[in-house]
Length: 440
Image (cartoon, rainbow, N blue to C red; front, side, top):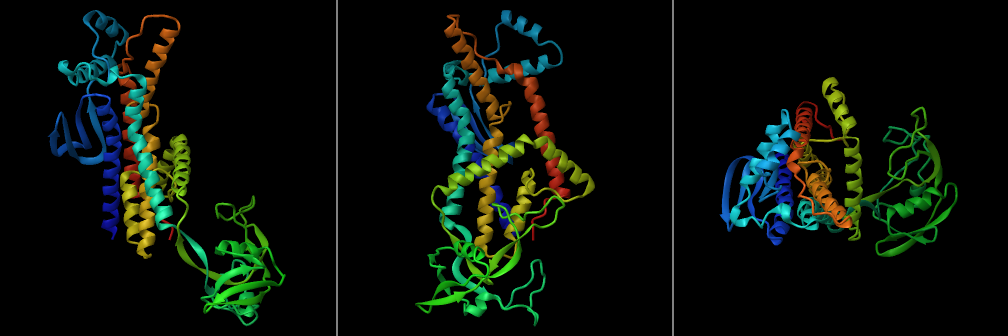
């Protein structure tokens, strides 16, 4: 099962990458751009096949993908312009810029000179570059919709699963009742496992959460409780006792005071437990979940330097890592394997794996839109800057400017790529030697 969970994530990642690149490929071809390659992965080529003018293939390292479009940047300037360009790019970076221009020139076929990316209108270039991340967003929404609306969310139902015999003090670790423990109100009222809650205090209930809220708001007060038993409705009298329980916030997290002590409050307690079941959610739940995950990933990236520092400290000191922190592909695979091998119902494990894959696509969506080359967001910024320059020239009736030469940004691109590689290496080492521990 561990290997199965790992394969699930690897295959899901491969599909996510393939669809990401398809999001670039389809609009590029629709807009007439010559696309020489569509590749999944990097490194040595495993296999490929040419269909029409495009070579489709898979490479050995499934850590990304790419399409090779003709003329991503304008061709190298002529000799007269080249001298000026050289004078503006003196030093160690000049050869990098020239190498990038030469590599770009190789993608421009003289017979297809009009089918290059940089000649597209700005909005078409934005569509092509945004298409990849957008496909990851769409896939995430589909996954979350299947998860939440197809499978559902595990919730307490109105069917009673257990009835406590007594009321245990707040924070007690005992599982058995003592002779001096007061009897639980539900047991005294005659509630039995298998009963289905129909109404509480005259209010019809359709979820256990609704029934629980009414009971907690009624300490010391006798209220009518209607349950369905053996096909017939039975009316009982329930008197919830006042009990001290730890307060929780809207997200279900325990509330503590300034000193870290648990905050207790008085609630009504009956002593019943509900059967759990997967309850399908509205179709809009998938979109809402994708939006929440997007916000969480944006927050993580905004604090990425701090998060990476924490990962490095945890790696050196051996302290537990933040389970909500950044992970490498290895870390995601380990979590998927542990989830698949856990002692839990198969549907529960599958739901967690689906959620993991959906979150991974949201991460791909947000990360690729960072406005730095070589990421898709960087290409979008270059296209928008080009459009802004052209708009400025039209407003002031000046000659159209030359296309933005993004090869000048190659030094910055190399720095960004180096940072990404270093970040990936840190996360990889951390996931190998100090992985995130799942809660038991």
